[in-house]
Every structure is written in C-alpha cells, then in structure tokens.
Image 1 (cartoon, one colour):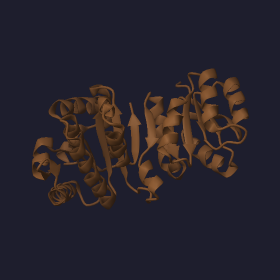
Image 2 (cartoon, helix red, strand yellow):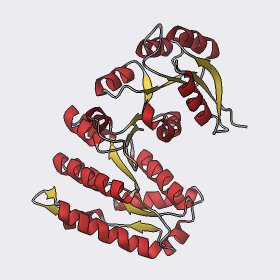
Image 3 (cartoon, rainbow, N blue to C red):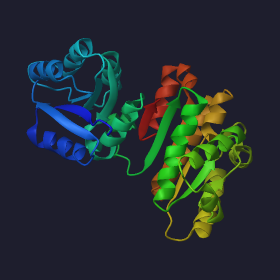
Length: 317
C-alpha cells in the first residue's frame, strides 16, 4: 500500500486553517500530522514530526513565516515547503523560494490551487499561483485556468501535456493540441501507455491536432500577432471543434505556439500571443496549458515576469 503524504499545517487564523485542512482531507493519499498557530511551534513540530510537506503562512506570530521556512529547511531538509499567504509581492515570492520554498499559493486562490500545488511539488516541481502582478495592480482574480509549465526536458513536457489531455478527455471534453510533430508522436504513446483510448477520442473528434506553423501564418503580421486575425482564427477553430465534439463538450487547449515564437527569439511576439490566448480563455471559460523549456527562464527577468503574469498558474518541473 502506498504511504500517505504527511502534512504539517501552519496558520495562525483558525478558521482559515480549517479551510486548508478540509481541502487536504478530500484526498485519501494525504494525512495531516500536525497543526501549528505560530512560528516557534511550527519549527518544533516540524523537527519532531518530520513531515513530507509543511504548509505555512508568512504573517505568523512570534516569527516570520520566511524565517520559519529557512529554519525548517535547515533542520528537515527533505520536507517540501509550501506557502499559503495573502502576500502578493513578487519580491516576497522571490524571498520565499530563496528560503527553500517549493510552492507559493495566494490565499484567495487556495481552493483552486492548493491540491494542484501539492501534486506539482510531489513530482519534484515548483509552483506559483499565477497572475500575481495583476493581483498587485488590484485586478480581479481569473475565473479561467491558463497554466504555464517550465519543463526541464522533452519527457517532462510530454508528461505534463499527457496529464492535462487525459484529465480533459476523462471529463468528456475536447482538447486542441498544438505541439511539434515529434512531441505529438511522443504524446500519443504516453497517452496510450496511460490507458487513454486516444483512437476513440480522435474518432469522436475530441482530440484535435492543429499545425503550429499554419496557425502562426494566419495570425502573425509584421513579426507580431494581429489581434483581429487571432480572434477570427481562434473563434473559427473553437466553433468547429465544438460543433464536431458535441454541444455539451467543453474545450481545452495545450501547446507550444507561443513557446515556438519565444524559442526563435521573438519574445515580445510570444508575450503578446499569450495575452490574446488568455483573453480568449477568459471569455470562453476554458482551460489552457502552455509549456516552455526551462532555458526560457534565462531571458531577462522583466520578460519572464511578464510571461508569468499572463498565466493563472506557473509550475517549474
């Protein structure tokens, strides 16, 4: 029998601590081994209990959550540290990861992000609630999901897309797949290995592949995406997929369209295209997953932050 993941919850506001615990209790593979309401107690419990994951706030009594994280990381180096906090400053996010954090969840997104974060960090990735720059400006929280994953290898990319597609198909939805030919072949093998009946999904027209080259040719003008052309092309594609898949099927999309522009040095065009996809995802209430190579993070900090800001969730895997 697979052992359950042991979690220590550190939150001084008791009603919110209950919310977190109730979310964790939805999963049979998770076990809450302790709860703490201040920084000093959190360190003591972490050292005594040796949990797999420590979820903690930043604004804790007696000791800052950032300092608590640093001390727990030193005493229990195998524990995964996950912040759940109202702090939306990108500088604070940077500090958290320098102190050993693996995940960072913005409290208003807790019900949406906590369990996906756990899954991400269990797989060895890192995860940040997306759109933090928008939150800092006072914009409204996103009601759609536009995920970004930085992938350390082609295998990680294929695995991320495979999980996304399998989940969408399992819910009876249609998926638009915009990936390179080699990745598409690997993706089909991965889905078949996961017991996904991809042949049936193709026959039902719920697994739809789209050429990146052809789509970019339709929407790029003068090196940048033209908003009108994009909306026309995207609406045409989504309408046709919805017609073929059935009126009750929702549509998800995953791919490497913007990442292809980024990889070819067209960083500004990639960010603009992400903005257009995000607007489309919000208006259509659809889920989108984009995958970039980990090396993309080597671009300027400003460019990477702008890229992350156009997504509702960011994972490093």
